Structure formats: structure tokens, C-alpha cells
Length: 330
Image 1 (cartoon, rainbow, N blue to C red):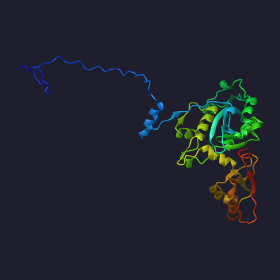
Image 2 (image 1 turned 180 degrees about the horizontal axis):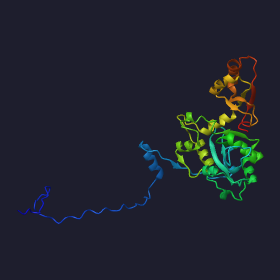
Image 3 (image 1 turned 180 degrees about the vertical axis):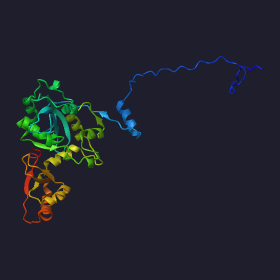
Image 4 (image 1 turned 45 degrees about the vertical axis):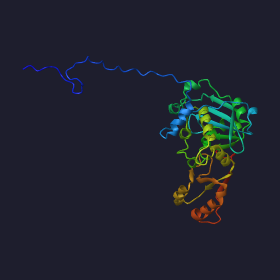
């Protein structure tokens, strides 16, 4: 028996009636639609954020530079950042410095950028490969380059305050580069701002920039200065405090550095737990455990050393009182 090859479509309204097969629909290539004239990028970003399912990072655009005379803000500060051949200021060299001068008022509101300097410098020895990996600065980039100290000094000389994101690192290198930095008041945006209290997860610049809703391309010295300026200027935390306002107040406070010289060896763990650090004397400091605290905490700290460490009521540990003029020096 011959079996019919005809097949019926059980879902056909008229079984046995063969229609001409319809060609499969062709997939249309997605056409790139032009951005409509009414497109508003910021409005779109805000709508995405308001959905609660997106966080938007906005590209950092450096502030325009205006003349000092045009700015209505009375005070002047500068952000500086250095790239170096290593961590030891005594033997390593600056290969790049960036500086951004800006105005501000007494309440810590940032005003305008009034000057920018960026310069590369060829060191006496080739740049180590690890430094090139970290900074992106190659020997070819710095070949024949030198920092224009006259231009740099002209930017720094009139400022009231120099700020670095790790001033203990940058200040010694800057002072070695130019004596203009020596007499300046310094502030550290790493250690003199309570970033955690302002809602930040860390104090590295990358964290701060990202959590401020920004991103910036490249991480060269001047780029990082522009990025830090915007982080300092933006209200943060539940109270909307501007980080620069807190930094300004911190820099104005006097601090005390106490050296627990000749402390009993078996008390080292107690000192370390309290926040003391060890100095081996190689940097010119006494060979001892030391701590740096706010001036108002001095009496309590001396009482602790006398009763808990020395066991001697008349003990007088070496004490240095520091202002922003002295802090962060080598």
C-alpha cells in the first residue's frame, strides 16, 4: 500500500488545501537611529538614576582657567601631584609634576581655577620598568624634558595652602625640586579628611572619583589634580559637607608629635595597638615609637605614657608641636 506523502497541518483552517509557503520573514538589520535634536544627555542620566537600577558616572571636565583678577574668591590654594622614579626622596627623582591653582573663600567653598602647570623631567637614570607600568611615563616621553621651575614658582609663590593626596610623599619631593614649597602651609587630602564619615569606602583617589559620580581618562599628575579638585568641591555624606571645608579646618589645627623614647621593649604591642608607629632613625627622627595627635589630646596621651608605659609620673617624652607649615616634611 502506498502511503500518501501529503501531510495535513492540524492547525490549518482547511486541511488538505495546500497554500503556497510563505517565505520566512527576513531579519532587518538594526539601523542606527540618529540622536534626536531634542536629546538631553543629563535628563536621560537623571531618569536612569531615578529608576534605582542604574548609577551613572559623568566624565570629568576640567574647569576653565580664568585670571586671578576675575575670581571673586579671596584665597588661593594649589593642588600638586608628583610622579617619581621611586619612593625615597633622598635618592629618587621627580619625573613629572602637575599643579592646579584655585581660589576659595573662608568657609571652604571652592571658586575658580586660575592657573595650571604640567611638566615632565628626564631623570639622571632610566625610569624603572615598574614605574613606567604604574605611571605610563616612558623614557621616550621624558627625553630632553625639564621642569620650568620659574613657571612653577610663579604658580606656587602666591598660594596660601598647598594640598597633596599624600602630602608626606609629595612634600619632600617638591621641596627638593624648588625652595618655594618650603615656606608653604601644607594639607593632606588623604589623612586630614574623614572620608568614611562622608560615606566613602576608601581614600584612594580612584574610589573618591568614582563614588563622586565621575570618571576621568588618564591618570597623569595634572589629570589627578583636576579630579581631586572636583571631589573636594562636591557636597558629600548625609550632611552635605564639602570635603575641602573639612580639609581647611583640619589644616588650621595644631598637632603634636610625641616620641616614646626608651619605652620598655615589652610595651611595644601596647603602643602599636594605640596607633604608635616605629621610626628606625634613618630619616632623622629619633629611634622610637611615635604618634601624631591633635593638640587637645596631648594631656591624655602624656598621662597614658606616664601611667601605662613608663610607670613614672615625671616622664617627659620628646614632643614636637606642628602646624601646617611643619607637617609632612621629611
